[in-house]
Picture 1 (tube, rainbow, N blue to C red):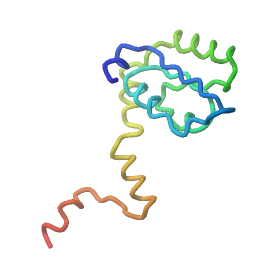
Picture 2 (cartoon, rainbow, N blue to C red):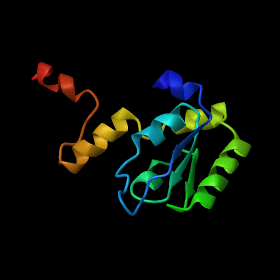
Picture 3 (spheres, helix red, strand yellow):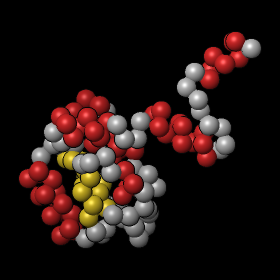
Picture 4 (cartoon, rainbow, N blue to C red):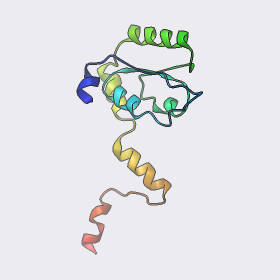
Amino acid sequence: MAELLASTDIVVMPSSTTWWDEMFGILSIEAQHAGCRVVASNGGGLPETDCGGLILIEPENPRALEQGILDAAEIGRLSDEQRKAASQRFTVEESVNKLLHVIGLDYVQGAENKHEHE
């Protein structure tokens, strides 16, 4: 998938909010990390996936989808600087730490070695 995204300029995610809300678009994050612009419906969890390369469009509106694609094509791929910034959002470590916090187990770096010294 990484190889495919590396050779792609635009990823389009026109999710329908009538039939299904995209809960969370991991593809959107992976695409932005790879330098792609993402044109996605402004619904469900997709707006939360903005890493700097997301263009949100009105769901189920073909004209908005067309304009979003045209805008993405005009802007082009993320620059190296934008891609670097995008890669700092939604990292595995950040996601795990947030999940652990939600379930009440705050992660402390180096905690895996804590019991070795006791």
